[in-house]
Amino acid sequence: MPEAMRLVTWNINSLRLRLPLLEKLTTHLLPDVVCLQETKVPDPLFPAEALRELGYEHLHYRGMKGYNGVAILSRHPLEPLPDMPDWCDKEDCRHVAAMVHTPQGSVEVHDFYIPAGGDEPDPDINPKFAHKLAFVDEITDWFSARSSARTVLVGDLNIAPLEHDVWSHKQLLKIVSHTPPETQRLGRLLDTGFVDAMRHFVPPEEKLYTWWSYRNRDWQKSDRGRRLDHIWVTPDLVPELSGMMVIREARDWASPSDHVPVMLDLSPP
Image (cartoon, rainbow, N blue to C red; front, side):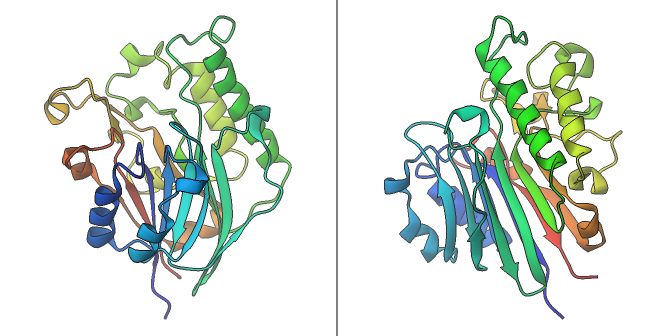
């Protein structure tokens, strides 16, 4: 029987800076596929050789200098999806997609880094927030117009949609990442044909976070987190959902990202 496919998504906040942390993650979890966001490295400087030494022989990435950037690292063959949209006509390296050809069947993987949106949740005065809303709208329209099967959507979606995806629903309702214009849009995107795989394992009434601000001196004590990182699957993959873990301890690793990795296992039924 084919083994489970283990997938990890992680906003690594600079791939080259945190290569040792990726090595640590690889040693601990032995993932088959790793989807990274905020790699912050232009394609000519992408550390492909170092990643292949970690066992990720198949790579698909888009990057730019200093910010953004996404990458799919895989032990299994990758087939990049052709003709992916240029969201909001910005060419800002926020999406890569590929077919991952695994022993138990091929899976379509989309890796997104949705814009953070700045500080002011008003699209009329904050172009960054307007860009974020338009970005989610475009993704939603695109997925609505296609039929998705055996598809996984992951990434730093920069929105904590549910009440218990933030440390204080009441206090964060007017804070970018948890405002109604964002959470409602993310709900519409989910409704294009996906299941929230993390909440498949952790009920909505339980707290679930993947991000803790660098401003929190003692992040564990205050635990003022948000669930900004997500893994969604199409309904045909739900029977294969066999495990999920938020790697909270990664927030205490040396020079950590402010996001922690999220792991999902898919096993053939």
